[in-house]
Length: 399
Image: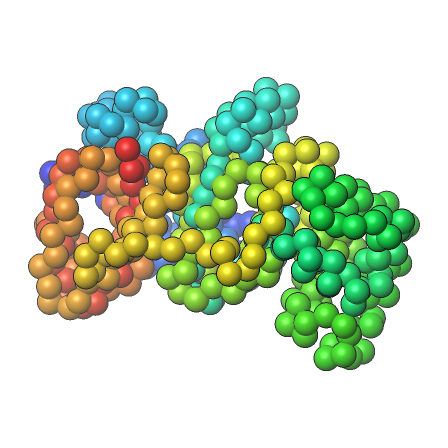
């Protein structure tokens, strides 16, 4: 390492169809300013910036042809003894920035047991055998669907959705008061044949477009439905959204998405950290493969009030707050440093990845600016000297 304990990284961008286009994408801005991209094209979608060792999109040690994964293999002590004891010689998390311009799929991520089964059966669809709990921290105003609504809320919404009642058929006459019943209702909708749901979907769309203010459901939800439908006009996922909480995050607010919990991002930019996996089980709002049976079987069917959906951060000092989910794979620090400050980034027992969202300065002798990404070895403290306000995220393993 040129600076003891610090490697600057070159990271790569995924250009999925749902990403924001051109310079409107924060992913594109960070990648361009951080010299991860040479240029940005107005018509290209820049969806995700990946930071880590996952083989689908591995980061590299800047100025070399060496991947971060190969560096870690050669220098396992950089991970920290606690990380090695639990996870072996591998970085246990994957760090990302997402710029969401169109809704992502309705999806969930498997447990380790399920991931192993899926990978063995369909490695083309499920590329690894790891679980994928994740946290999303808003960088801009951010919209998502997350977790099932309370059952009474779903029942109340249905009263203003005769079209969805038609899709559910006789089930509407029965109560919705348990996880088992929610499973039955959800599966009935998401597996409904096109000849059943498409006429009702078109009918609902026409009704909402005529008068969005008097439709029997909240106006905000009706507007979101129309936006989703515009992106996926023939997709059963447009009906599924009425089962899920619609949440709007302000910058700094977060969602923790445990295994087997349904979610779909709608719009905005976020930092995302997850276990080192790319396993996604999709069932709607996507042109990709839909594994509806697996999704229906794996979901927890927990109902969560909207007031409990956000995941809180805990302040650790004046400059830092920490998002630490109830898992050992990852946690994330958000760090805000004033201009012209010498800030001590304390040593931690885990290797970490540091992402600069804005600002300029130095970490040791290395320049630091918007889009800079660094790998920090465990047990090493660093001084960051700022020339302007600096905003950072640091992903690490809390073992």
